Image (cartoon, rainbow, N blue to C red):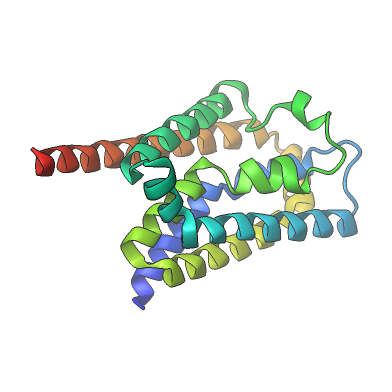
Length: 204
């Protein structure tokens, strides 16, 4: 197992998970979370997201190819489109989530926090494609490391939220993060298109 591959893949997955959006979500809850509630929600959502992504990493490619007959490059392109829209919404509106949707659920740990905010289209696509490239064991390890890092960041949400509010930095940081998310999405689509061109060229 190559340590450099593990490190780079973990950071890439962490970027796709986008911890900033979870911090802003958790720190903006009304009424505010107590520390115990924040810990419980963060841990529960991390476990659920890990289960979803691990199952995808292990059996997802078989399901895609033999059941749905979808190529990985198609998933990259579709996932990139969805992630781009999420990033665009953050740049334009200053938030990663719809406040109206949050008002309809009493426990956000599974929906929308675990899915689709943590185990979203980007991380799902990466889990599937990384399994093809690096194998399921390496992919699950990288997922676990990225989710642990995200969990630790989520646990600081109350402190980070208060600090950002004092300097009115929440909006600008969300928009900057949204731009980065959109750029990651464009790169994902370009990679998918490149793989499609190779597949078409190889088959002609």
